[in-house]
Length: 151
Image (cartoon, rainbow, N blue to C red):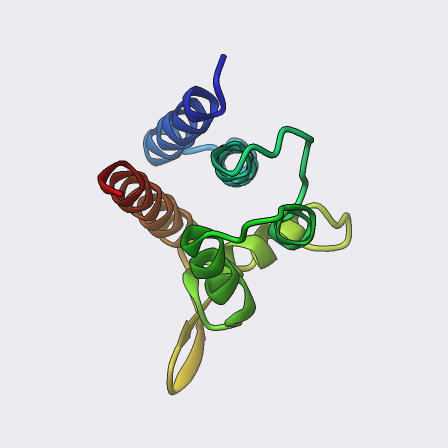
């Protein structure tokens, strides 16, 4: 299976988990579905990093964007765009990665903060944030893939 296929599969699985969350009423199951959606979204992001690595003929595993950028001989525009998003604490990608990091810590509950340029507000429906991150990651990947095929 190619990294492109894995990325697409993980994005699809995230979508299915979010849809299931909407139809379930058990709070414990909803929390499990939300965490699973976050993990699948993270897996999709990591798979996409591997897609980018392959585009510059780098075949070793990577676990972060910074690791990828340090290892490759050519840093692409796609990698730079992701790096900008990761480094901006107010960006949707930085917020998503922080929520994933927090969900992996045992003392943390998933508390999603949505940053606006002028304020920080806690989203009372974390699924809305995860749904938004899923859509934005999907759109970004589609856009970057299209740009790569045009060049």
